[in-house]
Amino acid sequence: METKRAGRNLSTFASSAVLMFALASYSGCGQAAEALPVADLEQGFWVCDYVATTRGVYATPIELCSTIMEQLQTSKFGGDFEALLGWWRENKPAEHQKLEAAQAGN
Image (cartoon, rainbow, N blue to C red):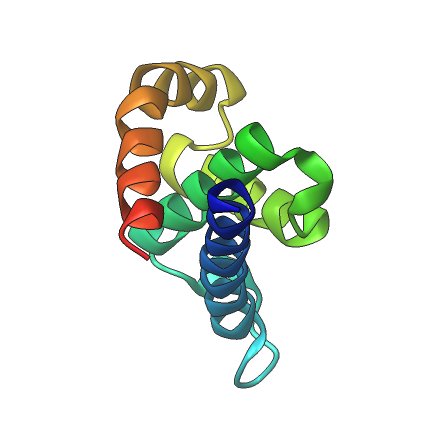
């Protein structure tokens, strides 16, 4: 029973976070995710990464998560995938821990 509730909490958390980015990305004048600040792109990236890691890639809105990742790669790393990969490796444990703690608080 607790496992089902934890799964629902994670799904609700992830859905809320991704919905926030979808609305921000596609609201007003048809602006795309590239209009988002890097900090928002980072947050969206980590939500997508965490959900894909813990629930599977098909638990994420793949198109939106891909757009967020591409825009983050362009905005923060000048298009350098290797730099993005190094940043991801370095920060993944701490970022996933933050999201796990936030999800547990729901």
